[in-house]
Image (cartoon, rainbow, N blue to C red; front, side, top):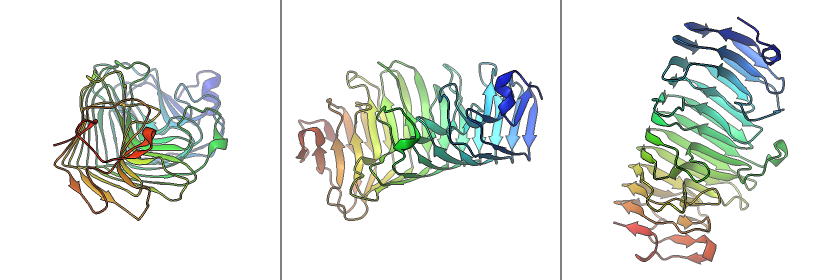
Length: 361
């Protein structure tokens, strides 16, 4: 162990160097801007497993620079790594959870978000570097702005995970107002500003996602950006269920299609053999955060739950045009339909026609 100035004095444990194994430790912390464990200058083999982390704090001084988290890597060498985080229990984190390791599996993470961008699991993300595999994790989340999984630049594989989230009004927790207040999403890929960040081969499969919310929370089951520099983004064989629990909660969709509306040549984001279920909206083509093009849904199954009179299979939103979308060989359950489209910004309800931006093949 080593201590490195004031930063390390408020963390439970600091370990410097490579070839580390940390197991069987219970770490309880509560200080503002604290981490549970710091792994500094890690290299070689790093295994962190069968540990318990409990964050009892509610204050975050600065959410940037990884903010508050149970396990954090500092000054790790760039490039692929042999870090493995598995069988850990994060009983609560006020912001972020697990990060950076190229293998994270069989962890259980509970996020009680007190700021913008609280990620339960954040893959390794470096240009041209394989992110790794993230499987068999369980994520439970609520609060100001929680996410299940972050995204990466290259070769990221997220599969066999379970995500359960609950949305409610927690606006008092954090001061920022970016439009993501009381917003929950299980899986996300975002390109910032005008886009152009390169991302290749991001694949998601066999994940189960259930998100419910009330009190005007916003739910995006998954939110993926399309861009001219994002290739091989595939979401297949997953189950996504989202539900509004009251009349005040209407921004609820199993898929929120995002991107840069000025880029109609964006490469496709492909959804294959998924089951999408909702009592509000199944597919939302864009919102204030982003409006994308060329999202392709291949053999989806659409299921309506409940009897909400405001339910729609598809909603176009976000204030900009959105084109190139494909719905191919879909199975429409009772109460859903290919021409059940709500054009929200014009306040008109369908029907679909071929001159508009949804292509049915």
